[in-house]
Picture 1: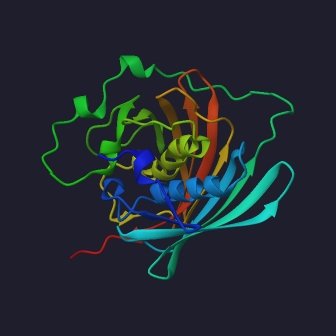
Picture 2: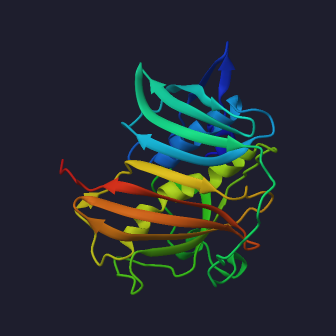
Length: 275
């Protein structure tokens, strides 16, 4: 299993940022959320001290390889309390991801919290997927090994959820330590928001689909950094599928009921090729 703080740790070599992608984050290639988190952390390395992420908008242009990547960061707006930075992830001379990140150090303003966390059981009283499923015999690295997940309503086999394309689960990252890096901390909800749209869509199906749906993009609005709490509640919905696209959205909550981030993505329906 991987450690997020290590696997998106960029090295600054003469003013240029590099990292080698880890196979611990493989889903149809490097996970989209994983490379988006890499772009977010790169932006944080070029943002002013004291800034935190406000929003990120990511476009996935192609699938990367598990090789070295350069993160090219360009500040395009340097305001008094908000910066906008464009980030490109480049491999072999080809850009495979582009992102725009807004950062801010603003703290004053109105405070309202009209949305409430869903009334679900605490993670403390739920079983993990490792306890609910038989031991995995495949020796290969596995994306989900990077988390401990505890589902609210476990699903065994292809049985359609009567609620539709809804997924609610608790997650914690294994051996995570932000070491005070707010951009790294906000990468936690970013990865989950990107990842969970496809599993949420699958909850509405009664048979294994003949297609996959890679993300075209992901956008996330950060409300509060997760902070010291390990456990995050994901509330994901993939309620719209039409004209070759599946749209999903998600909210991430802390265990003490704070709304941490909101986001969503469009996924492109792609037939599974046999052979």
